[in-house]
Length: 411
Image 1 (spheres, rainbow, N blue to C red):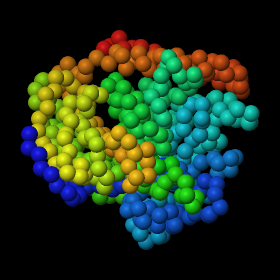
Image 2 (cartoon, rainbow, N blue to C red):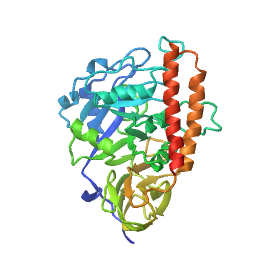
Image 3 (cartoon, rainbow, N blue to C red):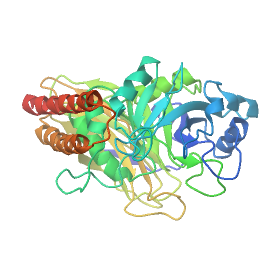
Image 4 (cartoon, rainbow, N blue to C red):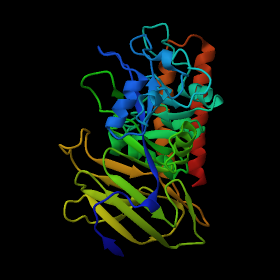
């Protein structure tokens, strides 16, 4: 293995990046009135190329509704930073959704399962909403998912619908880096990847951009996309869906594996050596830089000096198909970074070879147990509008559970 320490931008061979924040609220309560032009200036101040303004209900009003469908209003700022208007769908029972690239209409009402309101029913569940978004060309992601790794045995309540919707092909991305615990969210993501679900990593700050001081600034958590430098909505959304990039709150990551960038597929004829090349550039010191193959660390890169820069290449032994990604993370917080701790992850490079990926029966069983808890909680609700809503919800969840049972047997 050859290692060379440097301190500069990522080498061009790893990608031609645009940086995006998939989760910003232009106006969300507060005393200030924000506009797309000003939001674009906020983005430019953080060297952020694209903002997804997630229009959302806030205490029974939708502050940015007038901007939906208005196009790239941020272009008026003259900064080059773009503001795209999208939607966050609220259900604290099922989990919150990011709905990007809605080309026809806003999904109203934009929340469900709020007890003691006219929208107390858990229906429509998130799978229904995902279908409505996809029908108009949208991308569907789960946002700020997990502060701890869900435990189907010990958690007092478990209603998050993520595994059900992934099983049925409803989910395009997951906010691995966001207003949640990145390592806990990644642990769930790895299990889904092990089962062959190609869910892309997303990143979003959940910034409330019209507050003087709250979660933020915009671009605190961002997704770097290899779009050949293009900032138009079609290029950005295609790269999100394809997993072409990395999510980060600070460190910059470059990965080539088998000649493929993240989102690509390296095809091997059989077990053997897989060539890799990696790069790290970080504004803060990094404790750990690792290659992860099918959820297991297969290469730990020692960092020297300020722990902020590394270039390395070499080979790792690969005995099966699956996925490989590069991650950087710290054990604790850094005063120079306004998040829980520094963290970055590439999207996977997928590895195909005869025999496929290794068994993932334990991961399938984990999601079966998870959905058992969700089904029990949904069945216990007494506030569906009618029996048909309850039946449709439970049928959907049970069908998703059956998919994981099948995947466990396949392995």
